[in-house]
Length: 365
Image (cartoon, rainbow, N blue to C red; front, top):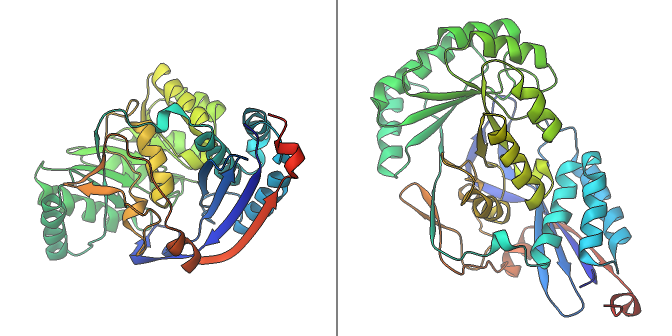
């Protein structure tokens, strides 16, 4: 099987409601979608959603990377093309992941085969800030079936502590809380916040300080009343191993788009467990494509709420048969294999680029 054609699609998908982080507000998602084909018409798809502010990559740079590497792998055996992309993945991890996962799907990666039905609990973002609104939103989220709530913090220590306490009181032990600063605290404020937390019902505190400030994150972990989880700091196994040496780091979150592919992601998740930490998986700003792939990996590797809930945020779905959400969980039916809705793809496309190998190159086997 050789790579006969690569088509790049750059999309803009408006969201149902704005998605608020400590460092930006998303009004839409703008992923790069990769379509890979062989000469016999088999197709694989991959997604790379570059989030400015979350990664060193830019959307424009990621698009150039995909275009250049798409040309470089045309006509090559799929396994060989994948290996070459994995070797340069650190240069542009999210863009490389879009290409690598498209090739993995094209080659029929076994993790994408749903041999038995699966039900994967998801967490949900929590938005309310005022006490009455907090009470109402907790009840609404519980009614939707969610049992893990994600609260964004990182701007004002005292206001954040008061809000977390209000959510704890409203939840009354019926839901688990994950707190996420998205690097919003400096060292002093991160330590003050983490040390003052009442741990009741709180599973973890995610990424207190800047991704490269390992010393600040370690200082927060040392005083935190709940385990700290690193996310933005983690790009590969070296970072996982570095985190394992820090007291108080109990969780590591991985995303398919940052690890670079299904095989690389699976290896990273296994390494987290080997080092005595707990893995968390999922990208809240992926479309159905990335969320489906993460859910497929999660079936045998994750025992907590998945963060692959991005598919619930855009107004339009990419799959002809949308991913199923029931009672706070993503549901995968036996044999499910997604089909991209090309009408949706074209309606939300900002740019397209097509690369084809000469037929003689793909006829070699």
